[in-house]
Length: 403
Ligand SMILES: *Cc1c(COP(=O)(O)O)cnc(C)c1O
Image: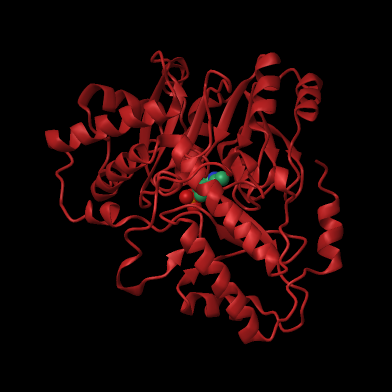
C-alpha cells in the first residue's frame, strides 16, 4: 500500500450526498466534486460592502490561518480574486524584490509556469530542472545556493500536480533556512490535506486556492505570508490587481476586498472550511485522501496498471498511471467509457511517456474509489484490452527514479 501510516485510520467521512442529477464524479485536481452543502451555500446573494459579507471575509482569513498553524500571529492571510495562477503571480511579484534572484525547483508543468511567470515579471532566476517527475533533493539545492550567493529566494511546488509527486518539502526547507535564504511555496494542491507547519517548515509565503484540498469551488486563491514580508512588499508589485500588500492593507482597514469579490464562491468556501474542520482538519482530510489513494492504487495494480511513481513519492492527491501498451487501448475511448459510467478522469501531462491521471481529492471516499476501479475494469473489457501493463519504455523511464 502506498501510505502505510494511513492503514489504521478509519476516515470519519462517508459519501452521504453523491453528485446530484447523475452528474459524474470529478476525479480531477480541481475543480473537483463538492458536497451538497457547499453547492447549497451558493444559493444566496451577498452585498460585497455589507457587514455580513465583511464578517465572512474575516472568518475565512482567521480559519485559514488556524489551518496553517499560525500560533503567534506571525503570519497573515490575504485572499485574492482569480484562479491559482493569479495568486502564484501575485506572490512572486510581491515577495521577490526586483533586485532579488530566485532558484526555481522544477519537476513538472507548475514549476515551469513559475519560471514563465518570472520571465513576465522580469526577475532574475536560476532553474534546477529535474524533468517530468524526479524530486529536487536537499543536497543539490544546497550546492546551487552555495554556487550563487546572490540567490535570495527558493521557489518550490509542494505537490507537483502534473505528475502527482510529493516533493521533499521539509528537506528543502531545512537547507533554505540553513543557507539564510527565503522560501516561497506553491502549495496549491496540498494545503489543507498535507502538513505545512511554519514551526518545522519555515517559509516567507505560500499560496493555495479555493478549489483544491479545502473542496470549495473555483474563484479565488490566497496567500499566507509572514507579516514582515507583507509589509516589506509595499509598492513592489508590478500589477494593481495582483498587489498583495495593497489587498492586505485595504482588508485590514475596511474589511473589504479591493475589487468585486466572488461572493458566492466565498460563501461556498466558508461552508467547505466548516466541513474541513468537522472532518478533523488537515489530519482528517489527509487520512481520507490517503485511504482513497491506497484503494485506487491497489485496485488499479490488481487490474495490471502501473504507477509512474514508486510508493515513496506518491502523493495522496493525484496519481499518474501509464497507458497500457495493448494495441486496443485508446485513451479517448477509455475516457468516454468512464464518463458514461459516472467518472471524469484527467489526461496525463508528461512529455516522455503516455499516461493518465486520477485524482483522490474532492468529496470522494473509498466506496467511490472501489466503484471507479470496477468501472475501469469494465471499460478495459469493452475495449478488448486484456492486459493493462505499460510498454517496457515506460518501465525503463521509471527505473531512473532514484529513491
Ligand atoms: C491547480 C494548481 C495551480 C493553479 O492552477 P489554476 O489553473 O490557475 O488554478 C498552480 N500550482 C499547482 C501545483 C496546482 O495544482
